[in-house]
Image (cartoon, rainbow, N blue to C red):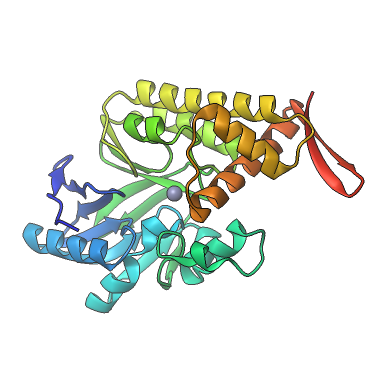
Length: 299
Ligand SMILES: [Zn+2]
């Protein structure tokens, strides 16, 4: 993986563009906070070099949520900087400590298929020293504000630093939405609320976990909400008595989602399950258990 160029977002916030964006927040006394660490040790190595270029030592990692691609660099960085303290929201912290949980939950709680245990879905384990809640947090002498953007992941935080929002997967960049018409989500009502948190965050600029930074928060929130509404409509239309998997297949086909491998298949199933639960609460679909078979019907 070629080494990405560090991009400056504000006086003390920089990020490394990549499949996953990771940020370096420069604090006091040449210390730094890393917000997310990417998928693996390559990301960790790039972050270490970025810190060297900035002349800072990382003293804290803040993981916004526990999808493997956001904390997979932790273990490498902890080997390089054993004094690092790792911060993550509760619940997510449990997965950072035991990353096998991610392929397990994607495979209905059972022992996962080996295809689900690649580093894309199962990162190297890392300790979490401090579990953090929404609100103010001072790290390396920098006042951060942690915003609750749970939805894409069960307990996700976005991080405000001065006039920059490190939004992680609270929203996706437009090119990412175009490529993935069924954006991953675990709690759809939460995901929709998260877009409003981004919209009203009052910052100058927001950086998504995947995609380019944007100054047009309203456009980003609108585009993401529209994508979720489109996906919800496709799931409702697909509810014609079939099982969850049949609904997922029909909804993916309608949305033009390509499903070429087992990890993507199971990520889509998880997302469609999130939609089915959400839509049932909304009274738009119902679940009927008949003859030992759970079928989904639009209302
Ligand atoms: Zn994620």
